[in-house]
Image 1 (tube, one colour):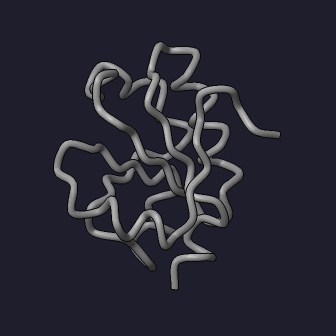
Image 2: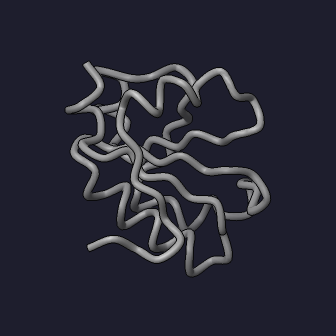
Amino acid sequence: MPIKGVQNITSTELKSMLPNKDKQFIDVRTPGEYQQNKITAFQNIPLQQLRGHLSQLSKEKDTVLICQSGMRSQQAAKLLKKAGFNHLYNVSGGMNSWN
């Protein structure tokens, strides 16, 4: 189900966004998953811990979310949307679509 105000993007679209330092990139997988296969621009904040990190994130910046398949990042987008974040992007297919 698409979430109003959350844009789904492909891994190809993500590649063009990565050089942009004005965006914040968040990987919501577990630390173990993140260590096995990561995109260096992304900071790892596991989905279960995301609520506790909201104050460290900017509501003004575009926020790009990724997980393994796109499901947890969609949950994270819903949480951030409720917290007042407006510029949200979910990587469809997650890390599975990256390689």
